[in-house]
Length: 389
Ligand SMILES: Cc1ncc(COP(=O)(O)O)c(C=O)c1O
Image (cartoon, rainbow, N blue to C red; front, side):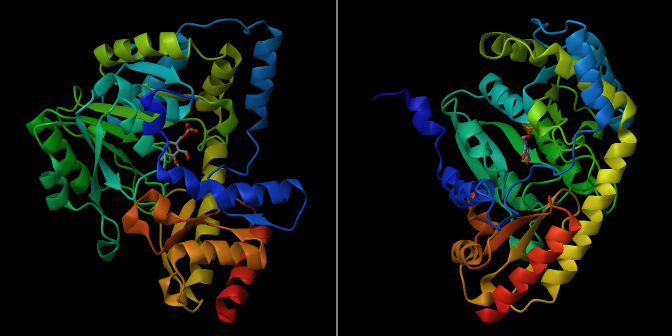
C-alpha cells in the first residue's frame, strides 16, 4: 500500500527502541514474572477527587463537543499558575489545551516549521521529537550534549548550530532521559540566542513538578521572551493522569490562534469531563503532587545507591523526573546487549538509551515508576546479573 511521504518521515529508528518494552509488557500481561522499568507512566492512581469530579461532570452531561481551545475556566487556571511560577503575564487567551503535551508538540511543529526549515533539539532528546520535527519536512539539527559534561548545555555547540534556516529550538527541561533541569545561566543563554536570531523556543516542561535538587527555572521568566516562548505542560506526570490526555501550550495569542486552526481540523476539542477533572486537580490536588514527588525522590536515591555499588555501572544522578541514566559499558556489554540480556536473564526491562540520541549510547534508561518493594527486587536481580558477567 502507498502512503504519504509524511508517514516515512514520522517512522524514525527510535520506534524500534520500544520492542523490548513491548515484549516485557506482553509477558506481564501473561502474568509472567517481569519488572517493567522501561516506561515513564506513573504507577500512582489518579487522585480520587479527580476521578469523582470526572464522574460527576459526566453525570451532569458534560459529554458533548467543547470549545476547540478548551474550557475558559481551565485555561484561566493554567494561565494563573504559569504567571505565579514564571512571572510571565498571561491570560486564558494565551492558553490552548491539547491531547497531552505530545499533541501540543506536534501542533507547534506544524504551526512553526516548513519544509527546509531547521529546528534545533538538545540531544539526548525525548524519543518522539525526531518524528515531531520532521513531520512538516523540517530538518532536525541535534545539539549533542556530552556525557563528559554531565549532558549539560554546551553553549558553543548550541550557538554554532544556529543557521539562516533555524526557526526554533525544542527542548525538555527537566529532560527525559537525562533528568537534567536547565539552570538560570543556561536558560539565559538560550533566551539571548532566541532574541538575537528571532527564534521560537518550545519549552517542554512536563516534569516541572518533580524537581528534587535546586529550583525549577523557566525560560518564560527570562526578559523579553513573550514573543519567543511556547511553554508546554501536562497533567500526565504531575497528577498521574497520563491516560486522560490533557496537556497545554502557553504562547503569544497569535500562536494560540494558529494552533487553534490546526486543532479544529485534527482534534476538535477535548472531552469536557476530562477538562473539569483536570481543573479540579490543578486547583485542589497539589498535596498529591508533593506526595508523589517525595516518593520519586526516595526511589531515585534508592536506585542511585544500589547502582553506585554495582561493578561496571555508573549511574547519573537526575535533578528531576522519573528516570535515571546508567552507563553500562563497564560491564563489557553495549547498552543494547545489556538491556536485552538483562531482560532475558532476569525479567527486568530497561530501555537502551541510544534511542534518545547517539550521545546516550552506552547508557540504559531506568524508570522508577514501580513501588519500593519491586524496585528493590529489580536492583537485586540487576546486581546478580552484573556480577554474573
Ligand atoms: C519530555 C516529554 N515530553 C512530552 C511527553 C508526552 O506527555 P503527554 O502524556 O502529556 O503527551 C513525555 C512523555 O513521556 C515526555 O517525557
